[in-house]
Image (spheres, rainbow, N blue to C red):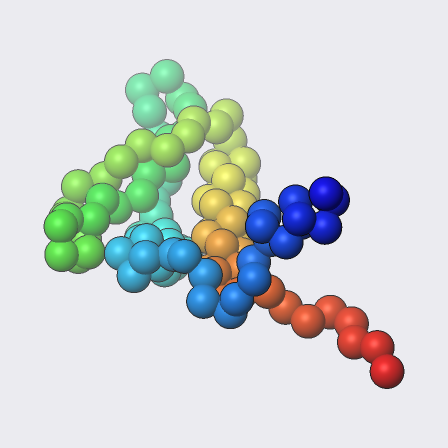
Length: 102
C-alpha cells in the first residue's frame, strides 16, 4: 500500500505538468527589474511587482505585494520572492538525481 501511494504521488516522469504560461509568469517574477519599492504616506514601504497582460508582456501597472517597516526589509522580501520563483522554475525541470548506487 505504501509503495502504491508513493508511486502515484511523486513525479514519475521528467515532463512536469507546468504550463508554458505559468513558466513565463514565474520567469517574469524571478527578475528583480520587474519589482519596485514605494514609500507610503504612513512611512511604511510597499513592495510592488509589474502586472502582466494577456500576452505576458508588462502592462505598466504595478500590483502591491507586501508592506514592511524598513526599506531593507522590503528589499529582503523582494529577494526572497525572487528566490522562491527561481526554485519553482528549477523544480519544474523535473526531479534531480542526488545520489546513485552501484
